[in-house]
Length: 417
Image 1: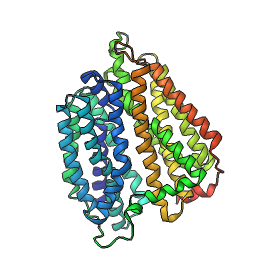
Image 2 (image 1 turned 90 degrees about the vertical axis):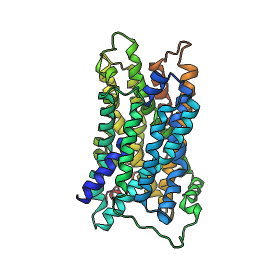
Image 3 (image 1 turned 135 degrees about the horizontal axis):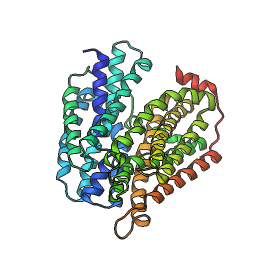
Image 4 (image 1 turned 180 degrees about the vertical axis):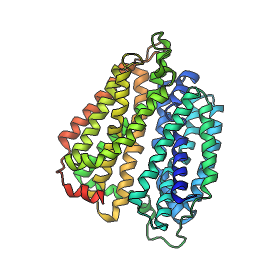
């Protein structure tokens, strides 16, 4: 089996595990368990909490003590056991704890899988910039395939989705031990634990421009998981309306939502053109206004004649998600000193996927329960989405006014090379 195929299988399974439950857990939570929105917001915050500290800690372990491919295998096998236990949980507080433990083991495997791929490609003397992206795109395909499988099997509201994820997790866990060996440094490391954890990058907050960038990264990060959390259950709850109960979008909502991931893979290809033509700040602004459209179109959509708006919203998602993540990463790359560049990237991820995700998940759950849910438990989805759109619009306008950055084409040239 060729190295590229081996790494492709790894990436496919890595994101298949996540795709099997991430989009559909809302259906299980609200339809099957009938738990509250406040508690559900806390569930989605577990990804952010784990992202704040676990990838950095795991990186230290993989660098110094246990090789990355073995750690990848160990974490996925443990994760499989936790996923199998989730359906046995019958109260939301315990579910939160178990999901947090699951995320503590899953989130670091994303960076571990990248480490394994980069190490193997370097040892094979292959050009990572050219070879890795076509391999990585199979991760998104794995995510989409998992969503389609769960939807077509009609287990979107069933605990069976966790067993599907667990089966893939134990498969990847065992498979990881066959992957090319990554080197570890058992000797003394020149890095302190402060440096290894990326905490030295916090000195970037002394620069007003970087401080603003990271604050807006956190504020936008609050929006990143909202449609992942609520998109599936939004479509599911149309089943109480006889006009929509038998529609494709209500019967197979995860398939409709998977259009977002397809769009994501396509917009990645457009990023170099947009960066070169409009510059980093404008591309980030496009992302922010795309979030306004993403939520606003959901607000006017429905599974009937309004399905076109939901589909357009899913297409817009690719721009909303990719443009900020890629251009933001490039901004950090171009503005930070080489000695803390890796730490700066880690801080960017910490602010978006860590603090931002925790903020968005927690506040949105409380907000939906307090202001947009009737005494009978009926959620006012149009106004929920319009509230999210209004939030995104405020963030975009504040960013446009307060963040100053002059477009330099060399930044894009350096990124391309």
